[in-house]
Amino acid sequence: MEHRSKTLKALTAPRAAAAAGVLFALLFGAAIILIRSSLPEGAQPGSQWLDAGSVKMRVAAELMPFAGISFLWFIGVVRDGLGQLEDRFFGTVFLGSGLLFLAMTFGSAAIGAGLAASNIALDGTEAQTDVAVFGQMAVLVLSKTYALRMAAVFMISLATIWLRTRLMPRWLVIVSYVMAVTLLIASDVSMWLALAFPSWVLIVSVLLLTRAGVFEHHRDEYQNSLQR
Image 1 (cartoon, rainbow, N blue to C red):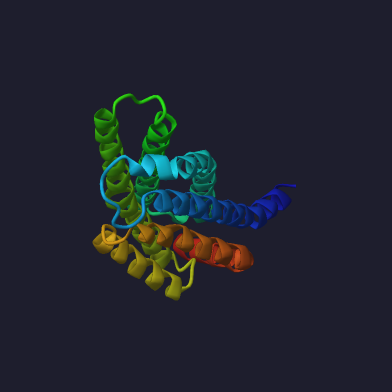
Image 2 (image 1 turned 90 degrees about the vertical axis):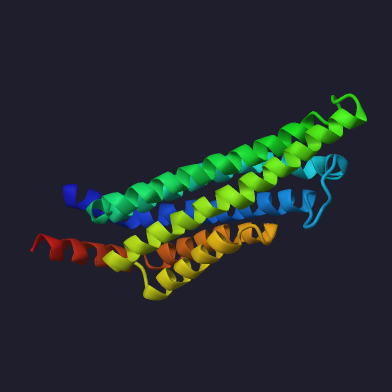
């Protein structure tokens, strides 16, 4: 019975991670597209985005909690798959950066949704414009400058764990490093770069789904080599 339980855990954990990762990629990607279309590239600071993008911002805010739940599940099951092979230093950075990314993303969506929902209740064109400009800048700074860089740290730490344990193919490690460095350096260049992170999570999730048996085999093999 105990052997069967371990076998079932080994088979289901990567598939659960893949399902959660795919769901996060789809929901978060959709939310990012809605937010970015509400705040188009090069838009002038002002309150006009509240009138044009209020509905999109509110829909994005409704999607974001479900994306966050999926992302937390993705983190949890990936860590469970690593087991005792997880390095404490990189594991801490991996978990911390993931939680910070999620918190900043939630904060960005909440600010935008709050301003959109209160658009009708605001009195005075001048006051409304001031609040809208603050909200616009806060959403952009939180999502582009801070959240994306935390996502890059998340990618780097997990890629380093994969490199040391050989649990994932080397090409994925290289792609992860390249995408992470790009986000670290150029996250302020374009708002659409935020889509790189859910795209990466989608790639990882598909690999976890298709390589479930290989993943478990390499993990057990590496763990046995350490015990020797």
